[in-house]
Length: 212
Image 1 (cartoon, helix red, strand yellow):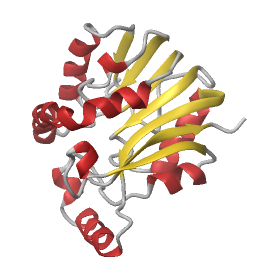
Image 2 (image 1 turned 135 degrees about the vertical axis):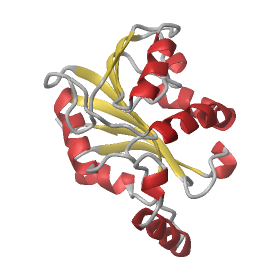
Image 3 (image 1 turned 120 degrees about the vertical axis):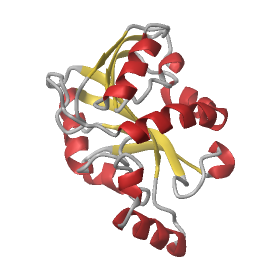
Image 4 (image 1 turned 45 degrees about the vertical axis):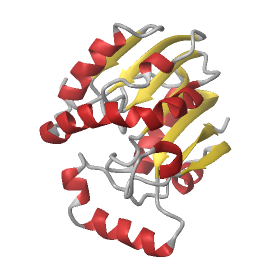
């Protein structure tokens, strides 16, 4: 079943640009996934740049990606990954997985793109075992009021249209708490740390736990 999320121009741009961004992002991907074990679901896997960073303690990754061009690249990258990875079509608010079927979930530069963050986090909660972890690396709203106003203006005008649905001014940490997750670890990053420019800066990296 196709979920018909198509951003052909953005997907091709992102597939190229993301490789250049790895100079700043790769080490944070390693930190994002360090210590994971068991069955993991990755929401919005994109072109699969997380795949080489999964530790050997992970037994299987279900990588969900609705955009066809990026999913095709992810499938090729999955074949070279150090752990078993299955790439499938699917949406963040309708994940193709049974209740309480995963030990951990990964959201990496994807919660900015979903139509309804609360619905996506509720769906992640559904498929995680009680006490399961959500690892996140997301760009978020600036703590500076003036910069946040610019992000809000971009989100209300052209940014989502040219950025594959991206919203640059979301308060993802607050959304996690509202969804019932406990944030166990949160590191705030800037362009200096990741080389990701404004408006996709700052970022947060961390771990949240599903309530039991």
